[in-house]
Image 1 (cartoon, helix red, strand yellow):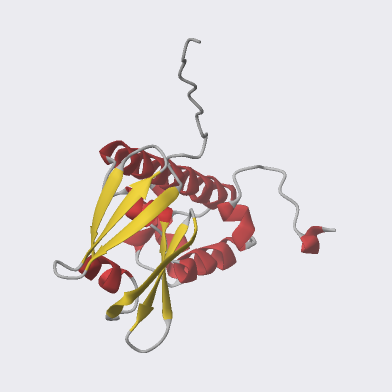
Image 2 (cartoon, one colour; image 1 turned 30 degrees about the vertical axis):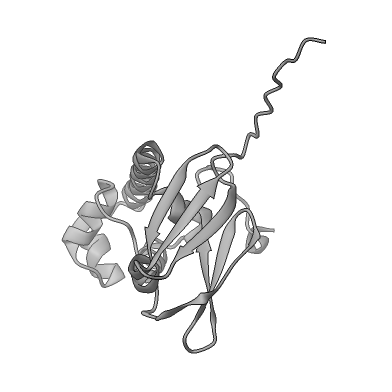
Amino acid sequence: MKAHTVTIELPQATRMMTRVEVDKENRRLRVLFADGRIAVVPVEEIERAGKPVTLDLDTVELPDPYVILVRNTEGGLEEVPWDFVRHYCDPEFTRSERAISELSRKALGERIRRRRKEAGLTQAELAERAGVGRITVVRLENGKIDARTQTLRRIARALGVQLVDLLAPGEDVKTSTDR
């Protein structure tokens, strides 16, 4: 009988964490992905990622392949998603995420520019109406900065459109208030 190898490829293998090992001494998590990549995540990075917390490394769980749960010293749970971890083992993932983010910023900027021109406003006029700096409008339109939700709401209001009209890529987006 001749032996043969069967390879099964999981389409989501790059997103699926299969094992978490805790290195308490060095305060690191060693995470294995289904595609064989291994990420070593410094605990300090997790502690600083949101509201500053201190993690209790005695309680680390992998309840599903997409999130690690770690208790903090106040008794709360911190969620560590797969994409946060993936950056520590996959430079290509980091590059592609940056590229996607850049494309999204540029697309948003184009929608703002188009709406501003349709309204017959200059960048300075839009900035004044929205209560933001002109340079903010310039940088948003050029896709150079990530927009804060509050800023986008102000710009949408100044343009006389719904926030979804700036965020949605399609021209024919209908909201419940359009019916």
